Image (tube, rainbow, N blue to C red; front, side, top):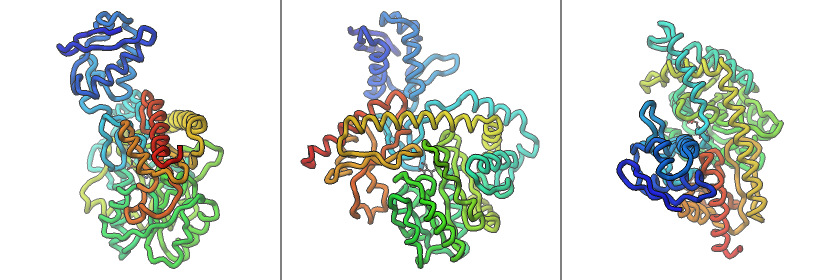
Length: 474
Ligand SMILES: Cc1ncc(COP(=O)(O)O)c(C=O)c1O
């Protein structure tokens, strides 16, 4: 049935299904936002008014508003009703300096967390207690390594949850992984380093950050035991940046034998390992892969972030460098002219001390585990010949395609349908894009909002099938 309601002075036509009014109203409002009939910052009618206009219950409208608000399409403004968000939906935006996805696209790139369940109330309580409890020292010019309370809370958490060998004085708080990576690279560059080894698959953004510090990049191959670290033998690099717990984006942990080899290499040759532990908390099997750093605290710089366990908007990360590198990092921070906001650090400390950080990790782990299970079901039922790998941890895995399928074609088919996904090759340095390899897509199951997830899965299936047909594989 077609119903009409006046929204912001405009008649909004809504095709309502009599059996599923909530679903159809949700879809109609989303569509109206996407095609611009409901522009950003438009006030929506009160739930009661819209319900009366459409002849449905007020609870149905309220539930639809709540769902679309959680997805980032709408905003509830205190005392002022429900509005179309100024930027929609920010929830799916990328987190690593990559361009933000247009609001028309569902973002299924690797490494993007689902923030729709962000523990707003608990974070508000942490912010409140941070402000109320802040001492005069806390409110003044902060310690450039981070506020004492945040360093104590983080050191305790990292030792307990990730097995990191750290005392609070040995930890530096940063504004994000990228900032700390740059500080580390500048510090080693200042000591004379010229080259850093980096896994051949990873974020182009991180490679650009490293290059911006004047260091050259040497790619290390990756196979199903993680980075082929033995390739470092005899290579002239000052450090190697790796994702040992869960290779990004291939998804495998660095094997025990390679971990031992890498640590022995760093000790024997006096090199550094930069351990990017971006999603170490998210394992779904029983294997706990602790931090490599504990094996050689004098040779490893441990790097972690709050972006996956809480949300990128928290804007905090941490480094545990070898003791002799710490003053150099702080020197570089001073020269860069910035430091993370102390009040934000105090909020994170209160969040950790109140066990909310652990709760957030547990909630997200269960959420991603169920998304991964649904993805496995869909691939098994709908994409014969394709297989998932690297799905034991994290928020992305690989969808191995049938040989002969073109990754670029799948990405293009997906984009045409409103879905942003990347092929594995796109995560190599440009000069290695065309090196041989089994075709695979990176499936980031964190990015879509809860309301988008099933659609995203169907679009993956359609896009893979379309590319397979084109390759004559159907
Ligand atoms: C492999 C990897 N390392 C590091 C990070 C960055 O963390 P941050 O959000 O602190 O920049 C990400 C985020 O996507 C990531 O995927």
